[in-house]
Image (cartoon, rainbow over all chains, first blue to last red; front, side, top):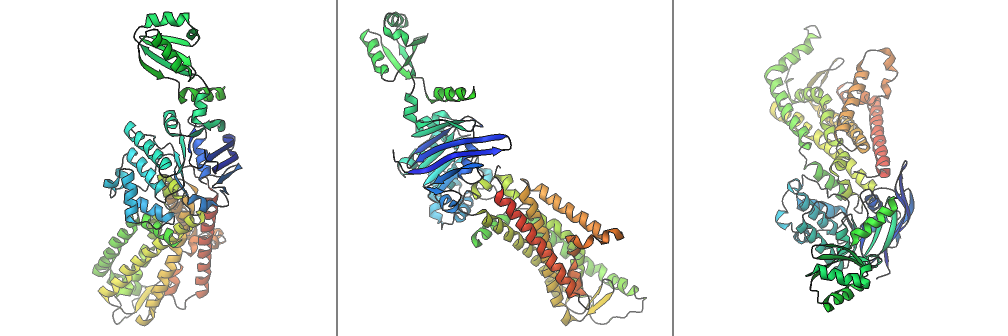
Length: 307
Length: 279
């Protein structure tokens, strides 16, 4: 992990009268991270992102981006950030091309037609460059949103629920694009989502927040390995397998059986051991499916904090 | 700032509502020219001379482009605020309604720059509207009907020789630009307060209507307050068509209107800079 901090949030709080939307939040995002910012709806994710982008002012706390205070160096910092905040809204009466052109000019960069078309090509909208955005579907607007974040070649990309409203194919395309930007282009990505699978698939580090407060922070791998996995074994002979389990120490890990599928709670390193156990006892295994995922972890964390 | 103002103007002129004012003037002025030329000029002259007991004789081309331009300006002037607020009331709230604040204000521009570019774009739109009116009502009228002496009836009859009229029109249009800019800036200010464009448009018109009525009601008790209504100064362009011209009053009116423009602009700026963008 690169130890150069790109975002450093300290004791960040946003209060609207009696409602505390973000409460004493601390987090760090490092260079090259795909940082998952995870939380249920209303957890304070969008409020935090709006503060990161100076759309709203914090009640207290500090934000440093690129090691500079956000309030003092707002313009310099924003020139190196591309962002989508919540749903992608554009000037509907303008074409996709014109939207990108005026946003690039607003960013103070000299933009060429070639560059705009490259961005539209990247998100699969080059054939609709001359169409007014009001004719676009939600998915197309979402992709145009990605294009506008990249138009000025930012170092940090902040994406707030970028796959919301997309079909599975569209979601995969956006995920692939984020991975491409991170791995191939070296961008740091701050990705807010409530879609856990998305974070699990692409984030390197993550934080889970609920009710405006950070619950856990770390690498996705670390957090996922903190607890036992639920693993489903698909086998050929359930009855015999159950008898063997009953006589072994694996009975402590056994949870349930359904048809020819047995569910176990295991440490990651136990999976090959149990597989070997079945094979040695002539039980044929047709599939081993790890069931526990970020979803379980997320629910556990958020439920704990709701109590 | 110039780039941002150009972008704001580009956005303004890509909206259909922007052209309502230009189309309205483009229809109304030629209609007025046609109607006044075909039917109304002689009766207009008669109505003026009747006030002098039918003992008034005129010579030369009094039914000319200048007279038409004056009648059009006088007749349409009170309707212009409706056209100006359509754009002024949308300057901030249009961004809030469409959610585009989020892509605009996350760019490396200051809120001061954004607000000021919108302010200038509003003023330029107002200027272009006045210019369009001037071209149609003055230049086209002069081209169609020729020039000559101007005879107008305000509190009394004033007659100006043809060589003494053109500059008065330029000054009157210049003053009209300042007074309409005041209205545009009021709409701009109200637009900074809310997240939809309808509110500022209706509220601006309501303010103008209420204050104009208060300015016209013949009650002495209101006399004390009238100097404080900015609407009192909106139609002082007419002073350029009096003799002698009350330059002191024109200067005072201009200062008051410009002060209102600066006040509305400054207040909008303060609100916009402090505003949390939640749309």
